[in-house]
Image (cartoon, rainbow, N blue to C red; front, side):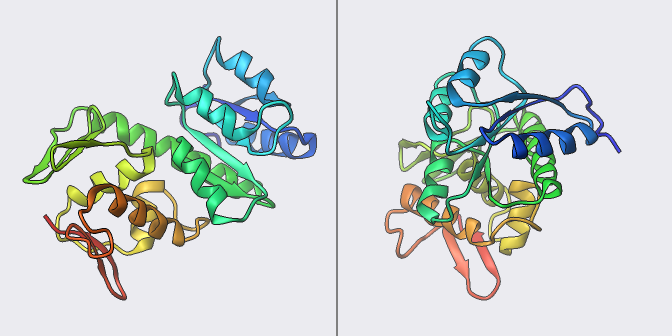
Length: 233
């Protein structure tokens, strides 16, 4: 069944025709419009004229790789980016997320999984639009503003990736409430079935490094052993 918004435009930047054609077929069946680009330079040129609603981006591309294209896009656009990668190392996944990618899928993957990830990212974007009218959440040493997406810790602005902000905002809106990793995946990514739960652990660690005085002994982002994480004001 097509999605509610059949005019959503998704760009696929992938140099392997067998992958881009299959992904395009499944996205078309889900009700999305699709544009295909075989390399990063062609995509960059097209995106300078019109940015799509979401980009599915392979990391290993000829001419300009996915990391470089993401960096270029983030200079002027917050378009959601879902990265495709055959690299399984955590450092490569973190690199993409820190550059501003919204999610990643490791090859080989199922087309159904990718469509689910696309839906989840678009749901998250719609939720972000609603948050733009919400008031800042403020504590003595921390302020989180959903409208500007600015975080201030101990008087200093903190730079967060999109997912880091989403996770922190979710936690500060529910102080002292404990969330499991699956619950956080569902709330932040919109899906938990296909995502490695360690993704949550990575984001919590990065947040602690950015907002805690002593990340090894966090005062705010606390672990509840055997259950999950909570924000302690």
